[in-house]
Length: 543
Ligand SMILES: Cc1cc2nc3c(=O)[nH]c(=O)nc-3n(C[C@H](O)[C@H](O)[C@H](O)COP(=O)(O)OP(=O)(O)OC[C@H]3O[C@@H](n4cnc5c(N)ncnc54)[C@H](O)[C@@H]3O)c2cc1C
Image (cartoon, rainbow, N blue to C red; front, side, top):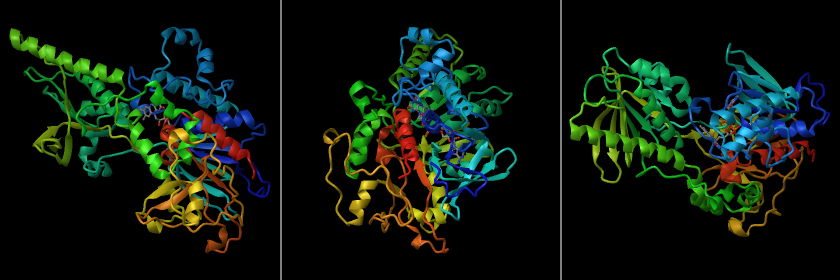
């Protein structure tokens, strides 16, 4: 990997990775299997203080949505020491896991496996700086990349130089526009009773304590969203509220799920649909036209987005049905029941406005049924949980802000409102020649090895891949990416204004951020092991 030309630097890393989640652990696992000369030259920077995997949603009983064989290594190399089977064996639970008769581990066990894998690669010489957040990347004077991180415990700034960068930061909480003003200002009192599902487990205890007054009363909590996290949070809240007295009145605590759709929809993980997550399909996605990819995405959306696992749906339905049984018995026998927390699914709900009443310390919603147009004013809730998913654009902000480096890829801060769009490398050839979109190739008829894909394009100074980056009529900045997840700089250095001589020598890869070009698997674990192997092969290739 080292070119040997930058040896004057005291600490030049061969590879720095932003984040140390499954994507980058898989990369370090593939790397340590191949790279014998591993000597302190690989560094991952992770903002968590120690290894953690979605800790805010590590709820009791939560199950993985995927087979254990879609771990960090098996599909790439079943012989790897990093497989889930090897983890089970090391923990003395292999037989017991087999006896369960299920391919899906609990989320708790999978998180423990990932932590075990992280410790394994660290023991092989991979460095991980936990507790540091990468805040900036830029180009160093000789075409490498400077990475700046902040140590979260004391605010200290750290600077590193690397020949290669892998950006794998996962997603950040997506907050509905109507809620954003309350999140943005952490000092306002409303923030303490508002949370995103990604922080649910850490904050819910304190939140419930803060709204549970000495005078017992029924609490009312809104969960915004209709996907897996929303369903899990709703059921968990139901359990927690069961232990909080609601007073002597006839009304118990209430958890309302506010969703746009008419009902909770099941995730499709049936065998034929599941083939969309096979590693081989990545080639097909990548070589299909933009319209083709959008069409496939729409067709298969229900495998992953705004859907709930059928097991979870059954469990939630059972709770709601049981409420009805209790209420019917109570009404008929005039028995005084201790009211249980009640879950209500409020479907077709749009939220035109949200306020916070500092007197009552409640959020006050205006809700509108998008089907009937009926408006519900003054809907008060003691707390709000946004189970509204994740967005994956933090890395583009960093690239935009990096000025010199961003310009290498045709983007800079001056166009900060223009969206960045990833485009397969092959499209650049067409764009350059000002051709129309290539022929759409239906997924089923695309060959598994696209001939038009260049996996190791030249990145050296004077390379021939100089392209004028143009915004399409709908104003997007195109960022070209190879099949092996490498971002392509647009030009050699003559476009740079500071007179620096050389082109960009460093390579930048992204992981988990390229769903639009590499397919639905991308934000999931499905192909994490295979693509890690592809990135490492590309990294070790000095072409
Ligand atoms: C609750 C939940 C359950 C899920 N369950 C499944 C499942 O069952 N099956 C499945 O296939 N997928 C599942 N997913 C999807 C999930 O995205 C993937 O499983 C996987 O976590 C993706 O790995 P990653 O490394 O790309 O991203 P992440 O796991 O998000 O890891 C990224 C890491 O980068 C760190 N980071 C981010 N920015 C910075 C920065 N600037 N500086 C330093 N560190 C940074 C983060 O702290 C994080 O540790 C689930 C997601 C959630 C939220």
